Length: 317
Length: 293
Image (tube, rainbow over the protein chains, first blue to last red):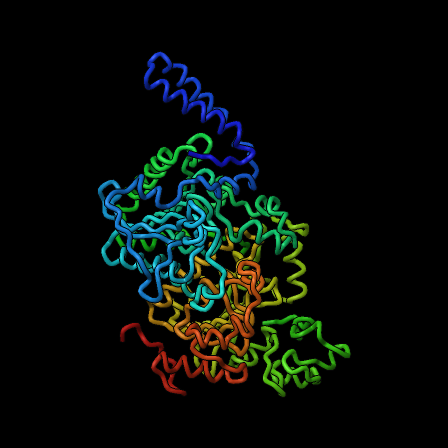
């Protein structure tokens, strides 16, 4: 699927293409099975080796890879009966955030996620996954719906940040994000957030106040984009690589800092090399979290989430 | 409490525009040249045009709080450097120089106080300390302010002036937004008022967490209040922003703040709001109401 390749992933992309070819041949010729297995193992090994030395900035590029699976891909692969619900009941419907009702392994859930576009036209329609206030207010509305009907909430985080625009300010972007955080804090149902790409700033957090926060291997999460950080602190937007490193925004950094509860592995070469396999790995992790959290009472769920965030911060005294 | 009597912390308004070595001050609004003494006497509000200039924390307490009623909480909390962050200058050094220039240990002060006899949980950002940015200490102190207000059944008055989350503490700063808002939910659940006072400027992660969630949002005239900074928006949309964009008056017109209040009327307004929301009259004995009573 991945036509576009970043310079550093080219060797892996070529190998994966060969695996695919061989897999097709092996379907007709059983004698190729052992060769296929060997090549698959070799590819996985090489991919792991190559990607283990990626710089934080390269990982940022991976988390923004244009072929990376998006929220709707995950919804398709890991839920059934998805019914999208639209609108914030205040102003409009923001396609940068999608949400609705679905079944996860048979259980009714509410899903909410940032949605980037594939085609140029869809990218624009979905505003590159950057929500306006009405997108965040749609999320709040869905959290409240989930609370009312006692449905667990699954969120998928993938945004550079909430949109900084004139209309967004006129319609109260700040209040809309604050209200999201508050609605998530008080929801009496389990919330599981999965960072499937970029976790950018307050826009990401609006879907991130969860009991369990999962991050994919090549997902990132930061207070500001590396470009933004570089332009403010280094006074030079081209120092993004330094900013990406300094901010400790990769999955392993996030786990070490206690920001995320678990890293979800990705298929060799990243989620975009095999969206289905990536989704199944995410599904397994969500299922495990859900089983743990569903054992808690509504009061205990709120308390659990409070304690989780209450403990975050580093200070003396 | 003791308060450092550093020259810089006493006059943090328009330091750069001062003329005649601090004896005279030029108003940012009308350009009138006034004696620094006259400006200070009027709490940095221009007597000619009403322009509000920055006011130091100590002066804010003098303006709003009953004499000697402020009892500071958690002043011992100090920042660390969890990421080992450096942007050419180490974060630790930045903190040290901010502590020297602002005269405070961090970018917020919290405590218990009285406004016209009404007990409140009071917090005020220190903009002079790294732009009032919210890292772990600021997040922790606001969380404690909300938690303690809930336990002691106090209304909360919080003065905000902040550029947003502190980048040098990275993702931990972002998490303070979630932590503080969760604590604010407890204040709300307890039926206690949160009076949010928005000063110039209030943007980014502080605006997009608790600042706009007041039961009553009050702004000073012409304060810049918004999610994204004007330069970020201009870069994104490649347009010049209209005059007055993201100012208090713009927010009032768009339904985001309840009132624009002159600094000189702030004390009376806050006391009134506390009494109205707590169902009390002026001079009532202190008797905190119970939720749902």
